[in-house]
Image (spheres, rainbow, N blue to C red):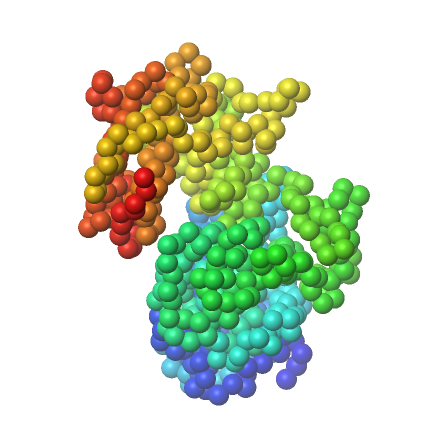
Length: 569
């Protein structure tokens, strides 16, 4: 067997018993015999496209793996995209393959029956093999070329570092997709080359992990999902978790500690790496020090940013990052980013690109975005509206106008890059030097403190609070200078946070029903907030009212399980 073929095809794919399990799809095993047959059929289908490059997008890890390995065997290059968007299709006019709109090939996996010859002719190995896209500091997408050899080396490296603690029958399960350079090597390539069975579907929410079968598992996750896991009141999965891996953005020690307890594991492993360089360092969270991976050399450039050499890079030159760091006696400590590329739920998001998309909308005159890292990682936007934008905001209200802007961005931005929170200002905030800084934007968009309140009445399923709006003037800043009013987003935020204080939610917020803003709220209004919960409907009904009548109301919906009362004073 040639070195080229071995680097493209996992050794066990060639030598494992036909009835061995390589994937699980909805608990059903997929054998090596089926995998081999599907790989041969996929090669033949891809050859008929007569295309040196294809765009590969498939949410199912098994189908994705078959297409990718077949592509490499044929000497074709697979371009990976994070989402199937109209703007992406326009920018990449190649055949699209996988479960996506307008796929060039049908979904037929499993129909080959495991009888085709395998593995076929040797591949052309000098091609790039893989192209992934990442945003540079300018916000423009950059093509990053990866060879199968680079991915093979990383799989071998991960098994060398972590494999001694992972028995052969351990199943790999992921809450992250395999379309980027954390999910691909950790959730797919490492177990595929080492022979660990892989659970094909993505478990997007921590509650879904409760469906896992008993047995040993390795969890490939993200700080965002682990944060949600830590916020659950209880977590009892029949699965045993030997380790949980996290990458993409900082994992707070407090979250890591809770997740280690919930998952009953002593190995919550935080990974530091990049799309270009692969995995670089790891630490055992909480409190562990960062350790370089074998063969990696780290140093600081003149700006205090990390630079490195690594066997996972395409050459032996220094690779320069935009991550700032310091080194002390205990090892490396990461301190932040030097550019305007934010990390949101483990994904790189270019703030400049979001602002360019916003300025292309006729409703927007100026815009500045920032990343907030708190209970959830999110993009926030401060916007100065055009005349038409102000007129539309006044006509439809803030909630519908927010939705309108999000819809306007959806054709050109990935979902993760669309701002979740909006502030409409008469001018963008700036510091004493006249510069619009991220700190000023964050200060204008930070989550407002709860207003002072007293409990006016308390029943088994209802609480009535009296709010002192006059003592919460920061909530009215910028809305608007001549007529200060309480923004609808603040009213929703307060209602949800106070509801969780008195009726803790054992579930995930899923949306609103009957949300209405009927009268404005000013600092002088003496307002009450009534909160009613309904366990059987899994909802909280909130009503803001004063002597003038009802100002706003709505029903907040929650998914599994139900809302249970709390004995808060």
